Length: 85
Image (cartoon, rainbow, N blue to C red; front, side, top):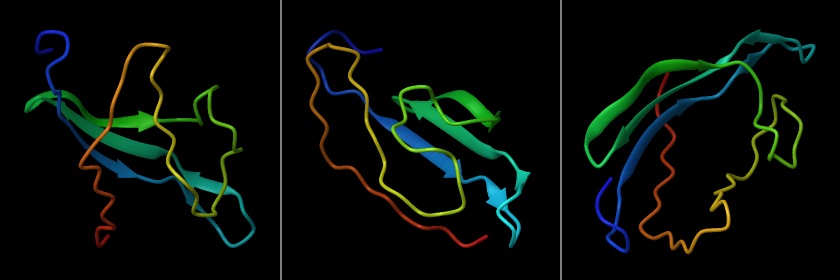
């Protein structure tokens, strides 16, 4: 991490879980994360939603939620880009 009060960057490639036509999950979500340009998670499987999520896991698209854990936090320049499979 950079020192306190300096902007940090995260680059997150997230692939949502996959569901069949009956709503049964066929593949877990996956993600790759870079923090300030340093790879910290590479193609990690995400087997379930986080306990802080107000939504249940499912095939529907939904909003993103950002956590601050009670610390002073600001977010800026957030991009959500849908990628081709």
